[in-house]
Image (cartoon, rainbow, N blue to C red; front, side, top):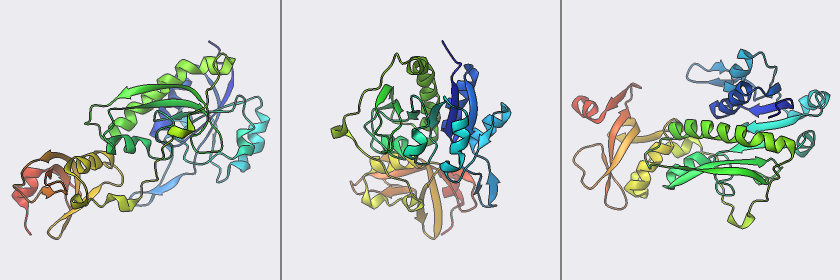
Length: 294
């Protein structure tokens, strides 16, 4: 297996870091990591580095954080010939940048494309109650997640995954598939096959507003899946009396016996098992009800 090709890696989050770390551990030459600029996060608005930047710094790999990719075009050109690998970068790659790479930019996407193109395929698989999802390795094109497929592999779902759990599982699953097929991609032994455009479906960017859980508008099973899919963002906010709460774990129930059994549109109940109270502390249903005052 040849690992002598020069690679520029595009990525930002923990999902990206899994693929980057696997490339490094398998001896690939990563000439640079391109990621988003550091961002302000949390209540204290602290400046936070992208996950891949931390990984790159540990391995003394140069990190480029351009506001616009055109700003690093000359750096990419100076490294020619160069291969691009991308996992969850979070920005559209324009054609003039795509054209700088041979055989292009290889993208790790957490769905069985052409299903669930777009920014939230992991959440969509949970919310829709899918029995499987998967990972696709494609060649990037300007249209969102529409590039030809090098490989894909299905991943069975139990129906109990939360978004953070499935995110981590698919990050490792995708990194393993990437390493398996990358030698044949780089040698030209594996050619990509066009996606079936007639089967394409799309996901949307999940907004903060989606964090308002309204059980009366969905079935209990749908509400339970939303809680799992939105666990770390945007979370599932609901009210009991005057208190704003966040559901972190729940199940479907046929009966409602407490304030934390929320009536849904199908006559069943979303029974909250664990929640975050107004203080920000995570607690069980029993702990909350024992201390509840309207």
